[in-house]
Structure formats: structure tokens, C-alpha cells
Image (cartoon, rainbow, N blue to C red; front, side, top):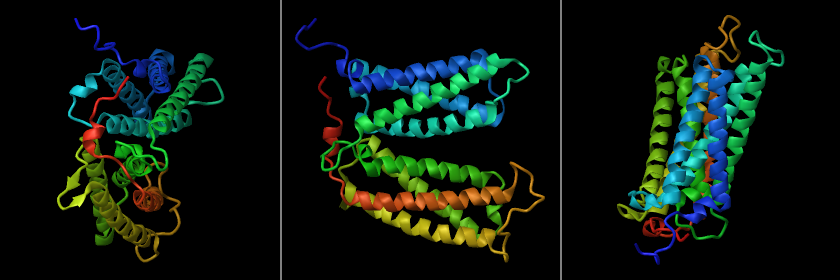
Length: 311
């Protein structure tokens, strides 16, 4: 056994602010899942969504922590820094959503029929979910590239993190479209759906290329220029969709500018159309910000991103 090769475990993954953030993620995720199963409970699509978020993020954190602590990430054909910051950013977004959805649908000020213990457990689950959100956010903050700093991972830049948020917002739009939005009534609204799908595909492509370490060149242009070209195209497409969708959904010629009084709560096409319109403008703003920040990106080639880190 070679005693000169250093410790087998990555001490940076255990005894560092980043390691502390990941341990907190594991603790809060485990506590939330255990309390939901024990007494807090969940039901319906909203409860299933929250439970899926906590279980998926907990499993993801276990894998990330284990691979980082044992240095086994070096055996993977991916850019580890890009992968971990992408996972942390995604987990932050879905944890925020679960931290809002769970108390909104399951926590009441009065005690339910099962007694105050159930209510108290649900409040505790909400607190753990909020603390888990802060832990994942702390990992993103610790890994994020600072202004003027040359970084090995594109996903650690502001532009890279915006890509994760854009993908998340696009998923919200797809969910609203699938919830009885009646987008199929007009060719113009179908065009908007095609725009949302195409832009999401481009965003996912950039993220996948970064995580896989394919950031040297894309055909005849460097990767950073490819990102700018894609982002500019997405801005133009989202700008058109953000104009077309409200016109063909809320103009009196095609729809109604006001919510119909006969529309059922939770299953109203008008509500879904509003969600799509609002988040279209949100994603447009994100793409514009991404275009601005992508002009300032400077990062080293992907072979440095894949290089093993020193403990």
C-alpha cells in the first residue's frame, strides 16, 4: 500500500464550507422525508410532487457527496464541477417550489381531525424544506464564479446558472400548457408552443454539453460564441411568443381578457393561459439577462474542468 499517495478520502468534501452545506442538505432532506412518512403525510398531486422533490434531491445529494468524498468522480466522463453546480441550482429551484406548495396545501392554523401533532409535523417539514433550500443555495453561492475570475466550469457562471433557471421556468410553462390551456385552437398559439420547446431544447443542449465537458469548439466557432448565438436566437423567439400568446388568448376576438365566472377553480383554461403568459415574460427577461452576461464569460477549456482537484 502506498502511504505517499495521500488520504483516500477527499478531506475538502468533508471539512469545508461546501462539505458542510452538503451534509446539511442530507440532514434536512432525510428529516423531511422521515417526518412526512411518520406523521405529516401527503396526498394528491401536490403532495406527490413535494415528496418526489425531497426524495430525488436526497438521493442526488447522497450520490454527489459519496462520489466527491471518495474521489470516484474522476472515473466519470463528465465535468464534475459543472455537474455539481447544475444539480445544486436545480435542487434549489425545486426545493423552493416544494417549500411553498407543501404549507400552502397541507398546513392549517387550526388542528386537523388527526390532532395537533400532524399540524406540528407538517410545520416542521416546511422548516426542514426551507433549510434545505438554503443549504442548496449555499452550495450554488460557494461554487459560483466571481466577476473577473477565470473559471473551469461554464455552469458556475451567471450565464450557466441562468440556463438552469430558464429550463425550470420552461417546465412550468409546459405544465401549464398541459393543464387544459387549449393551445391547439390557433396556429399562432401552436407556434408559441414550438418556440417554448425549441428554446428549451437549445438550453438543455448547452447544459448537457457543459456537463459532458464538450466546451472546446462547436463546428466552426468556440463554445462561448455558440452560447451567445443560441441565446440571441432564444431572445428573438421568446420575444415573438411573448407578444403572440397574449394576443391570441386574451383579445376579445380570440378569447377573454377577464376570467370567466363559470370557470372551475383549478381546471380553468384561462388560468393556464395566464400562467403561460406570465412565465413567458419571465423567461424572456432571463434570456435577455443571459445574453448580457454571456458577453463577459471567460472560462478555461474543458480539459481543465475535468482535471482532478487537489484536496
